[in-house]
Image (tube, rainbow, N blue to C red; front, side):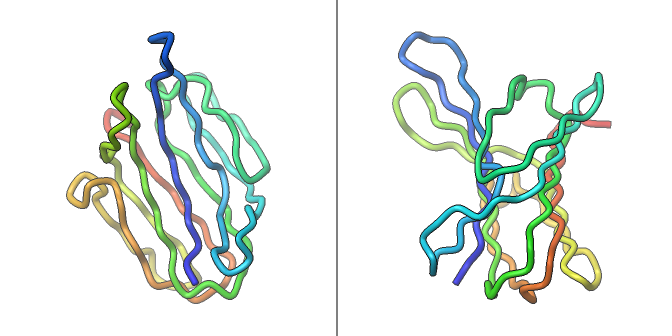
Length: 136
C-alpha cells in the first residue's frame, strides 16, 4: 500500500496561474489524507505548513519542498510532480528527489522519469525533499 506525495500546478479558466500542492501523504489502504509537516523554501525564507494539502503561493519561486512523513504501514512511496495544462493534460515537472527513510538517502532525477517515482520504504518516519530546477 503506497504512500503518495503529489506536487502539482494547474491553470484555471481565467488564465490566472493557480498552484496547489498536496502537502502530505495519502494512505491508499485507509483512503484518507494523512497530515504531514511541510517546509517550503523560497529565496526570501521558509514557510512551514502542516496538513494533508495546502497552497503553494509562488510556485515559480519555490526552491524546494520538504515533507516529513509519519511512520505508517506503507511499503512504497510514490512521488509525482506534475502540472495540469490549460487543456487538462498532465505534464511531469523536473526536480531532484531525496528520500531519507532511516538508512542511506535515495536520490532520483524526476526529470528523467516524467516527474513520477515509486520507491520502496521501510514504513518508518521519513523525510522527502524535492528540489526544483534553478535552486541553489
